[in-house]
Length: 319
Image (cartoon, rainbow, N blue to C red; front, top):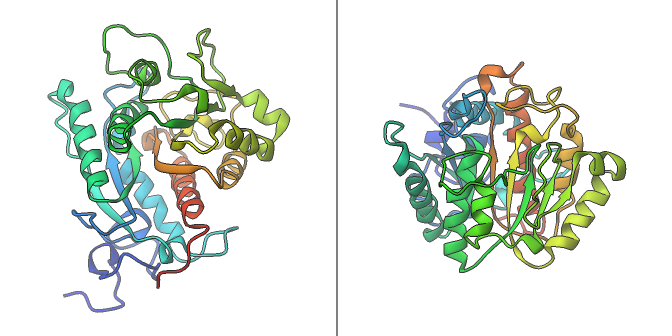
């Protein structure tokens, strides 16, 4: 029997609010030590893992990303994160609903399975924070969100790659998702922006690029300002591929590209996106087998925490 104060708060906590003191190197793991809750009803945010990497075109291993990001997040779960100065878990009821169960032996059914999983979270009234998994997972997640909200969403997309390469055969591929999202009408390209791009693609499908060179030249504050201008008052979905970061900051990913953003730049941009009506977020492509000292997993967990702080910024403490 676990006594009060002994730890394992992922299972023993009776409240979705507030951080608690627990050894970062021990205990049952959930994202930010949030309580596991198979039913997210009543929660503001439901964190879920999507352990899928069958769509990778280079190095596999992102199926292990959710586990790695949860483990890294234990370092961040002891108090108010810098520079926010407040504890977002006191303002948002956040639970971890575990991973989406997938049958890798039946890959054709996986996109629909991911979409149903996300739809269930949204029907319960919670916003979703997804942890990948390769970047293909964003397509079924976008389908679920667009269906739930009744129309296309603005997309704020951090990546080294545009992921808009043409595909007429319906491939399950982590380089074609946003081609399909545009064709299906679930993304409003006029209100969308792709940040950190540094691979060639002649057809941008109407997306605005604030590529890596633009970010390096203009800086994070201008990047955030331009993103806010483009998105305006549209409902938006945030997707962050860790290969947006330079391999020096995020080596643990399947398709690293040199010349990318630093972790500082990326976090500063996200911290500057206040006012955007985000309805969901995912962070993807953490492949821990290629990581160094868990740096990539920690970067992904920190970026997800910044997103939660952004969502909680203007809310009062609930506890």
